[in-house]
Length: 428
Image 1 (cartoon, rainbow, N blue to C red):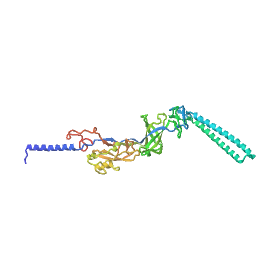
Image 2 (tube, helix red, strand yellow; image 1 turned 90 degrees about the vertical axis):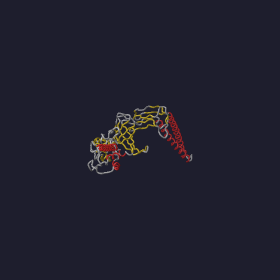
Image 3 (tube, rainbow, N blue to C red; image 1 turned 30 degrees about the horizontal axis):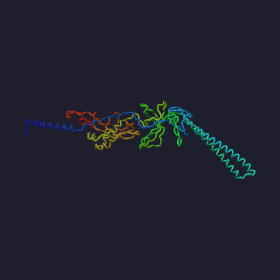
Image 4 (cartoon, rainbow, N blue to C red; image 1 turned 45 degrees about the vertical axis):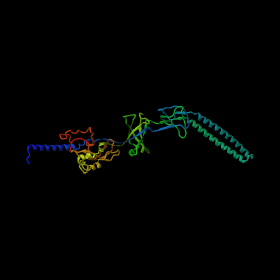
């Protein structure tokens, strides 16, 4: 078959169109390249912290109450007053107590008079009995009356002492040196002492030394030890960090909202008086620290490539082993199994000693995985004791957002950002 020039031109045009269609289909149908977001393995210090909240209070706090009932007739101190041990704080109306003393005094005098009369009668009975003028049982009866009178006298003496003591209780004295933190009564108010003494005042011994009662969950309490350094802040003093020390870890637990908490006592100095009782403190216990170590943001250890990312690269990631140089392949797996086996969330803990994975691109643009050991974490960064990591190493910590991804060229044939595998740029 012989073709003329016109036929050859037609055939050439058909072939060119077919090739262009093939190229166009290839570029349009090819998946875009993942636009990764990278972070850097750097060197620095890490402090592993356990956080909790607690309430500031004085080391020694005494509740001052009353053992007698009555009306407050006088108050001699107010809030924030500094008091000395033995100082008069308040007085309860002593009228009823004074009447009680007078009544007990009268009862004692009556008992003493009866005892005196019984003693005289018994003396006379002894004289008569010695002369045989009265029977023996009369002498015995007189002795019993005398003993009863003596017992009544002793009871009256005790009642008088009790009445005087109750009278003394109408004066309320400070049991310790300190500051009046609370005043719960007012002048003219009536207080009733029954089974428990009502609180009139709350006195803090020394506000230059205070403590925090911090609640620590059962998952973290094992890491808290006596003598550990504590940093804490209070909302009233923003931007200021204070220091304390773990003084005691109490064994008693308390369950709140199905969470088991233990009380940790943090002791601290408050020489300038900035910290006040009742303030809520945000407490950070320093349980472990590491200096000048390799560390990486936790987001990189949490990154987990999707199946689409693994499918794009066509081959499974390379899994370096701790015993071989980073970048050498030790296993070949399917994308799905690789994703499930090694792309687990990473990140260290306050106690350290964990495992993790980091994803990176090699010089050819292939996805690689570095198996690493993880140390302590401060919540933002995790220590990397090794292996397979070096300072300055670029690792993937996520996929760039749409605004961060490079735009694809409008003409897939003419240009566009090329991936390491020759595919147009874009992102997942």
